[in-house]
Length: 52
Image (cartoon, rainbow, N blue to C red; front, side, top):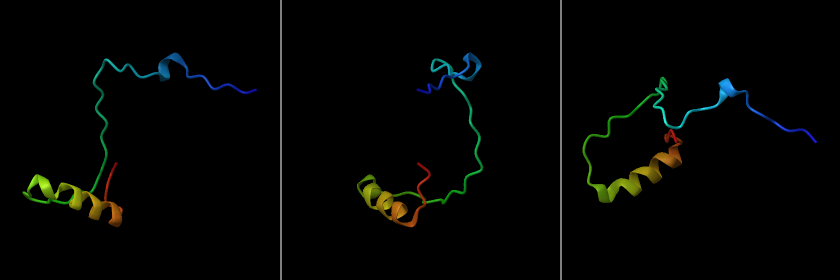
């Protein structure tokens, strides 16, 4: 049976803030009413534009 372990230097300190930089394309949506957020999220998901 194989086990996977992390080296101590590979572990994340969840009590510390880390900055992770990404080159991500974004779309400026401007202002919209919060009630439209589910529709905007659904459309972005269909296009594959969600980065999460």
